[in-house]
Image 1 (cartoon, rainbow, N blue to C red):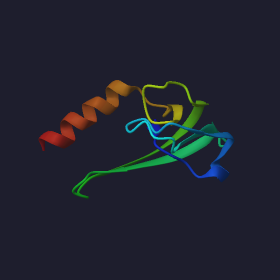
Image 2 (cartoon, rainbow, N blue to C red):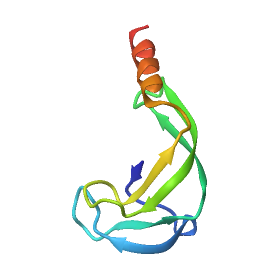
Image 3 (cartoon, helix red, strand yellow):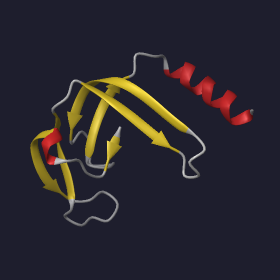
Length: 92
């Protein structure tokens, strides 16, 4: 998971770094203070939404090749199962 920024009260060791897409000095990075997270993704037309709970495996600035708030998450499910759901959802 990666995102451009994060609230300062959600991370430890916060740092201002360059924004990934623009290169301007406006990105924030830090180590997540939580061991578990809930994520939500909404499609651009607001017709589909996905919600998940996950355990944080690692977080911080793990790569300079994506948005600056980064975490490796364990969703507790095999990714092949998720891919098969997507195929079913998009074809029906």
